[in-house]
Image (tube, rainbow, N blue to C red; front, side, top):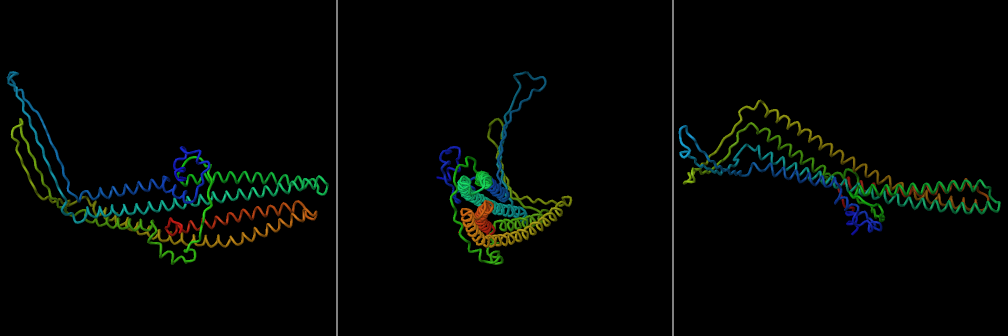
Length: 423
């Protein structure tokens, strides 16, 4: 039901206000709605239609035609009553079929088929990219939501400190400047909360864009499980060998090379003859009398003996384009290697930061506890307390960011492996 809410936000605005979006909802909506996915699907349909169009010359061709005419004459000196006219009519049915052209037409068809396969690969690559964008946008929304909680806790602590200091100032155990400083820090904490709430709204707006939907952002994002991937423990060379054949960009580029090779063969056959079988039948008559029938069948040889050296030039261009496609395949292979390597490094780095962030949060909270005790005992000062509270807020926020850095790095590793499902 939630996915329907996202697909039709204007019709279910009241329901959307209380909806909860899961990461699977976000991915499903992105695949269903994002315009880039729609464009990729349409381009695949175009390539498929063009492949069928390229096959058409290999199949029989049939034409039919008909004609009716009326004619009259008015010779000089004849009276009006002697004027005469006549009807004429004819119809014909003709057909033909290519018998042989040294593979020229068939290679064009093979090239179109390869282009259709390449379009399929490009479409899958687009879907995988959209899935990655949706996941990253979802993690951004989760991160900002948790940062709101950190900001609220910080504000609550600052307000508690301010209330405590107000009492100390009232009984004269603390100077008024302590209260002024804490009031400033409370105002700063409120501003920080407002900023992070705004960041969360912006993140959900970006999530809507990643999902390809329009409408309200008055929904919540559900916590997402981000389990570790088996690939995290494998080296780049092993992962590359396992996935290079599955990456849609690699599949598409190999198909483009096959198509270009077929184009080269077709260009080489351009100046060779072609043989066609043809047959036709016709009838014609006048004044709707008995018509005359006729039929013929034959084989036609067509041969362009000289085309101004256009054929050799076309062959050279096709060969050069083949070199371009082969170089692009090398580029794709290098890109896949780099993406796997960078994603592995990103996961390892983010995981290493998690332990440090946890330790920093524990230390900061202990520091705040000690500062609060010293302040309550009259030993510490407000500056010491403020620094400790700032440290807690900073380390807590960093811990949240690191957690979603791990999630984002894993999502990018999935994309580098050419996978959409998180398993």
